[in-house]
Image (tube, rainbow, N blue to C red; front, side):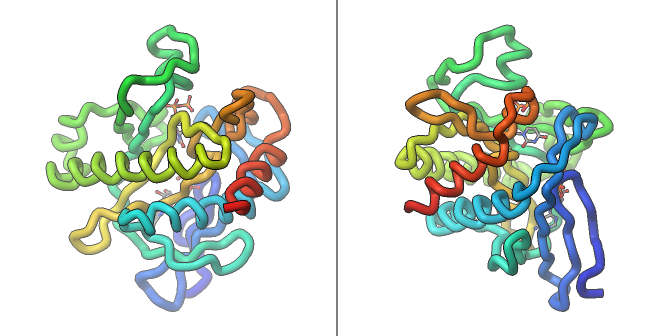
Length: 234
Ligand code: ADP
Ligand code: UDP
């Protein structure tokens, strides 16, 4: 039934629509970290993430990446194609930070000589374990062709967003994508927002992303607003 909750996650609610092949993706004001152990509600976050996702998905779509986005319905809701999700999180890193810096015992901030792509199993109860590409294949999460396509599209998303954000004085440090299938086509789903990207002010290094919440730095809403305002300047 239209309006029925298909799925409620940590950051979004997925709602059924009249058209069975579409969903409404409603962004919540909830912020979570540490696999949901740390929680808060930040007024305005849902609307900012919906807006930023709409702009960034629009940019990658214009650059030839198939995406699930159809239209923005209201402040916090995007209409998307219902995809059969791969169950994999694809992370691309331009700069060493976060879990990679921790795992390797390195300082954050080293620019990587090439973009690094990693795969993770989307499963909070297992803390999203990292997967080798062979695991993705052996677990049947994606075919060889789909894996290659996810890598290619992730690289393309990076080229497009890195350049677009840099033009607004923002360094794209790393980001996470989720892909799904629409028929035979590998399509970019989910969101692209400061919840799922690390965004640093290029001049000052100031964090304009969810690390403000993860690391108790405060000013999350203002940081997301800053990203949205800069993107609006186009
Ligand atoms: P989480 O499950 O990580 O807590 P969210 O709160 O972000 O996630 O909920 C969104 C859910 O919807 C995720 O499980 C995501 O994989 C899924 N999803 C995103 N886009 C689509 C789509 N186009 N079709 C079907 N499912 C989607
Ligand atoms: N990320 C995400 N969801 C996850 C894990 C990571 O959106 O479940 C994003 C995160 O915001 C960052 C990038 O993926 O932009 C790389 O995250 P990392 O592996 O460094 O993990 P973290 O330290 O952020 O948990």
